[in-house]
Length: 361
Image (cartoon, rainbow, N blue to C red; front, side, top):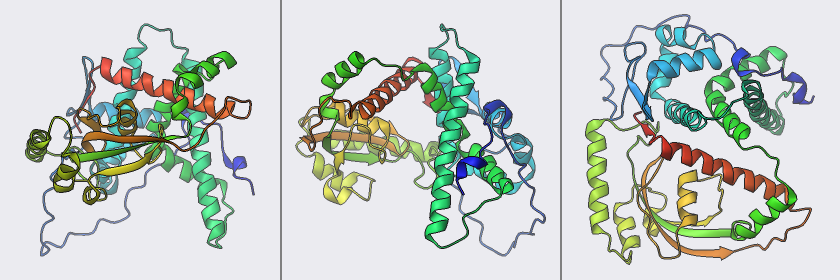
């Protein structure tokens, strides 16, 4: 059965949601057990920490209460009340959900501030956000159904179950869809053939090219949740970064050796921090890291690059053109996609820079 038939019209302001159910019973904790160790990252509780800052964007301080209110009003009605009553929902504030929520919420505010002098068509903006949510959820649902079929399990879903999936998806991914909707609205896909050809000529290396780098990671966030480290642990990470920078020679000749000894990326440290085959827009790596890798020249060192994993120092090793693409009618769709993505990325990074965006969680 085609999954498209399950999807209702999606509106961010009138989301299809299901209430977050309270637990039927709360077990009495076993007081003989050893208490869990105190987390080394920032811990926030709601509503006690409602006024705690989570980001600074321009002159506006975003609080945990601002984030909760926004999710409750735009993506999942009932979320605010559930945070106060349901332990499993409260635990989301210490899970791998909260850091992306904070980053996306702050990015939305940065784009709003960047666009303050523009006349925003709210209906068109909401339509772009709803379409992005629809496309994202459809892709997730198609994958879910395909996996069930591959496992030999029943793949037909009731409308009620799809609605429950949608409610959960919008809670977890709604802010991401809202952010991408902003970008889709601000950078429309309406390029002429001449504009596409000019972009292709100016960025030919990005089509079929790959970059190799060495990088050093210093984690200023918890490896499991992505939440910012608490003040003490963050201070140790900052001191570690300063020590590593002091050990690097100006010409980067000992970069790989330092990476082997001090990088906290355990997957690449033993290889001198090497990451190969980085495409300009690589789905497997943070945008800031790809951006830095492609902006450097071979042998050049970056400044500190911050991603959702922590602080990176990057040395570009080389560039290779693995495929050569010509500007043809068949290539235009992929060129159009890359051009739009490039301009949207430029827009988002410009918004972050102009607002001096700072994350506090």
